[in-house]
Length: 155
Image (cartoon, rainbow, N blue to C red; front, top):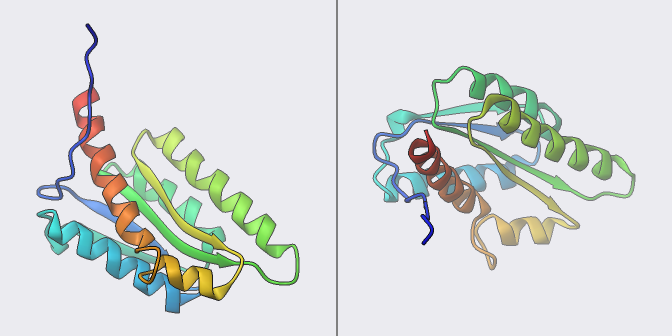
């Protein structure tokens, strides 16, 4: 017989940092609201949240890494919105943000959650920030709470 370990969705007693891009703030502010709402609805106290604003998605990974390595937080949630334009800029920023967020988690051994939207249009971003497709900020916080609990169990 095998042992199965699952994380629970509890915010009580947890501390999280949220790194939020100011670029496309009309989207990222909605992602942040969704993440905070999720945390509170799962027993979390907003006094245990730290929000760090950065200029854009490219600056998210370095900031997330610094926060994770501080060991002050049970997890770091990265929120941003990269919307495709008419140049290859989207591809470079999206790829580096994804690699950087993954690297921040791997080097710190703290859950670092990728909540950066990468969409082809503003409409798609709006849908994922609280319209038709739910709120990906909420989803990122859910992942952070689950992973924090899971890491506690694995310690």
